[in-house]
Amino acid sequence: MSKRITVIGTGYVGLVAAVGLADFGNSLIGVDIDENKINTLNQGIPTIYEPGIGEYLKRNIKAGRLEFTTDLDNAIKSAEVIFIAVGTPPKDNGDVDLSQVTSVVKSIAANISEYKVIVTKSTVPIGTNKWIKETIKKESGFRDFDIVSNPEFLREGKAVHDFFHPDRIIIGHETEQAKEYMTDIYRSLNLIQTPFVWCNIETAELIKYASNTFLATKITFINQMANLAEAINADIHMIAKAMGMDGRISPKFLHPGPGYGGSCFPKDTKALIHIGESVGVDMSVVRAVIKANEEQKYLMVAKLKQYLGTLHGKSIALLGLAFKAETDDVRDSPAINIVEKLLEAGSTIKAHDPKGIENFKKFYPPPRVNYFEDEFDAIDGVDAIIICTEWNEYRNLDLERAKKHMRGNLIMDTRNVLDSERTKKLGFIYKGIGRN
Ligand SMILES: NC(=O)c1ccc[n+]([C@@H]2O[C@H](COP(=O)([O-])OP(=O)(O)OC[C@H]3O[C@@H](n4cnc5c(N)ncnc54)[C@H](O)[C@@H]3O)[C@@H](O)[C@H]2O)c1
Image (cartoon, rainbow, N blue to C red; front, top):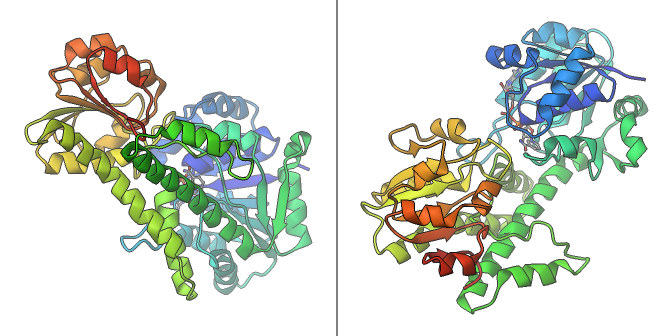
């Protein structure tokens, strides 16, 4: 049976969950404190760039299954199931800032008076769901509710596809009733035989951190292998391909680059160290990953300096600001660290990104960085190009035209998206990653 669901937080995760759960036939209210966001969403206009989301948004609003509001109290009262999908950003010390979750939990406690299932989709440290349960009980005096940990694994840029075709659904729960509710909500996924992992709450919470940290480790490992391959005249693409043929390894997440970024891996790896330390468990592998990843980002700038002699007074075109292709999300993007180092060294930066410019401006407003809608305007008169994101437009960059626009002839391709031989033949100095 379909359920009345409220999703709190309509960011990258909450919005996708809201439209997806509505599309499964549930009746959905999406809540956010950001009034502009809510007004825009109620008009059927997506507030993030995510391929495919607009169509689902319009379709479900039109079908009367989906609406958005800032009225959290009523949205809590009317829901049978509440999904918490607010942000859990890092604090300066790497620990998790749970203030958005805390504020939502207080609102739930103030408005609960009949049975509800409270589901946490936000990535939260181990013990948070139990804390949510105790806090609601203490503040409301009400006990007839269940908590569920249902961590999210979507990839930005492929989030809609991932919602409808998940590799697995993880559900940490305590009661049969909560299990029945979650089974109902996700019933549509039975058609594609999605595996469900039913476990206790702590296990579900840790599955999320363990998965993200493992992927961050895999990326960091291949980046170090790429650096080694470069030093010994080997080709990282052949190495990754051959490694990936081993069924135990799998070819995914073996692409070298400028270091992992985004709103999840950097914060979740740091949080896992705090979680481990809080119970006296050594997290030295995770520590090493974070350190190597930081170094990888700065290595890109060091290489640029090596080829240009000095960075002072140089004009650099930065192609790609988003932390990966097909998203406008620039949170913890390697481009941020690269810009920081280039500015420190006295370079001027001309930046382009198909979708990420507006978000990047919040970190580096013009004129600290100059932004261009057309990549050839960004390339015009520069000494070097650094490609930071694997957008298809850069893969298919008109290099002959680029050559005419540039003052220099260096291309640093931190994603190996260009054909190195062809680029060199056209007279560029080409520097990729992990191949000479
Ligand atoms: N972005 C991803 O790829 C991804 C993937 C898996 C898990 N996660 C996790 O999901 C959670 C959400 O991430 P996100 O990227 O969607 O964050 P986000 O910052 O894009 O969205 C959070 C939203 O919550 C809203 N919000 C904050 N406080 C609120 C309140 N009191 N009431 C109502 N709305 C409130 C904000 O206005 C914002 O729209 C995080 O814990 C994150 O770690 C993210």
